[in-house]
Image (cartoon, rainbow, N blue to C red; front, side):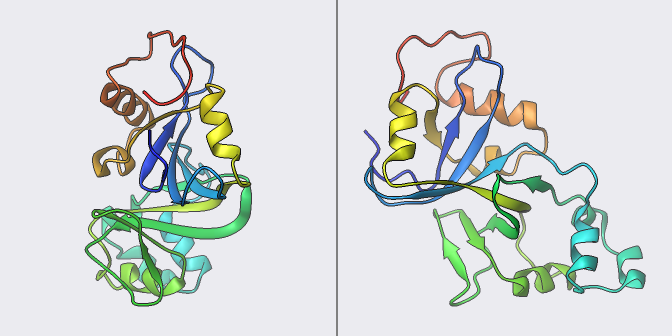
Length: 191
């Protein structure tokens, strides 16, 4: 059984109406709070160049010459908690001392605009997603949800976390568990 969920994915079980995936950023053990970012839920009216403009990281003129890969950085609705706060989930090839939290060997989290500035200057991490808002659980709540069958747990592989297509992310997460969207789950918990 996994006691520290940081760096793992919570995946809604197949066969239901939702196909949610949450990347867990903080969780120490079953008795602690948990914090994560929902994946695969883009903010349709906002692209990454607009985020950089709103934060005054770039000028309108600079937005016109941003590389396509920067413009395509996903902007996600990370959850209903911290609804106006931005979170940058990224590959661990860039680390800002006292600002970046290393979640796993391959994935880090930065919550400050300094990393947005680096991305705007084209010196940011190789893989990035930007989430507005987060998911949060009180002590013991996420563990309770897992045991009630609300979530399956699998490793948070970068290929899934940074995958561009939400349907593909969900299918890849289930495949890690030996499941597919048509599978029916009868026992809750960890797969």
